[in-house]
Image (cartoon, rainbow, N blue to C red; front, top):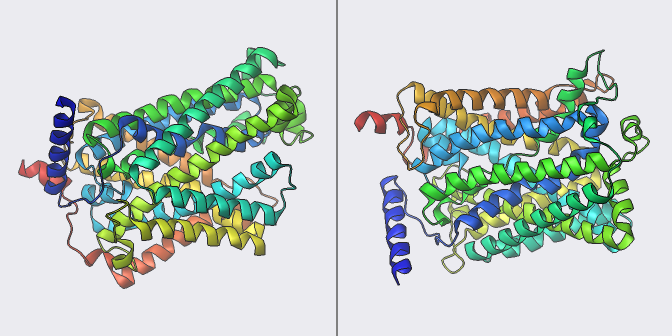
Length: 495
């Protein structure tokens, strides 16, 4: 009985705080700390990230690429700390958009939300499409373009149905996905370390004479993309802020836990795979283009390999589920403030399911259209997806820069989680990391390719930003509703 009373008090307190920020919520606070953490972890998905990029990273930078996994974890932890301060003061659904709105203003928030929204729906398409070949391998089917498209569309349909089931079901599926992925990572990694050791630890410092222009640094920076692509997802913990119990305390904790556990799992999987590769030079030369399949099939045999593939599929599935949940909350938050076309429809809320159904459907339809486009041109899909990771980093960067600007102008975070005197140096360090990581993603590395392919990441970002700016300047969506904005500094001054 006491527990129920405490829960009611917490809910009333959080609802009152949300009202003080200018919002009332129809969401149900059904998500616990573990559900919130699992949502962030399954979005981050170490298994999906490592298995997808291991061959590229090892072939490009050799075994020392593993240290990029560590460096990126430290950099993103800094960002998570900044986000923790912000969400603790502004626990509003939608994450990056409402945070940017309160820290800077309406125009800045509109652009941050636009960039992040496009990046999220493209990432849903990318993850769903990437799951196709694994489905085909599990069932022994040739992973043709048609099969991959059908599997991707089926995945999106399933996660949409589950997301329509509400917060409690979302949390349960996320916890299951987290448990399956972490257990799979530990079991697979542990088995490889115990039975498939072909390399010693000294290999982690051996570049195998990989270089670019006579220097190892460019090769390492290229391979470091494995770390850059690994550690986003923790922000999803804040995207569902209005569905979390005691969010001002729990969400900053969930974000940090996502980085801690995600970093451990990522490093462990990468280490186990590295030490299990029988011929590293074959990977670097391209003779073994898929070392993950080589290692796992040899270590587990045909039946065991399929079991491992099932775990990988669960990871892809959970990742797509969490991505769609995050995207739908952003779209709903955006529409609630009348910041996008069809806001009257996208801001509708299902009282029965306690979710925004039309925002969820948009987060299903757009990725599906992108995937269907691969039937016309797989190259076009690659070009569209190339923006995804950079777009997410740009969205992060806009929030961190807004927090830095607000601090300089006098903002003192007033949430239940603050960094105190460390706030300014950590924010500066987080922004510096974000800029360096974004430059590394956008850096042209294919001089022999046509210029538009060499600069495809920059071009795709420029197109997304250009379209967003044009719409913002012409339609002025940020003027449609006078919801609170740019008040972080004013609130500090008034206090």
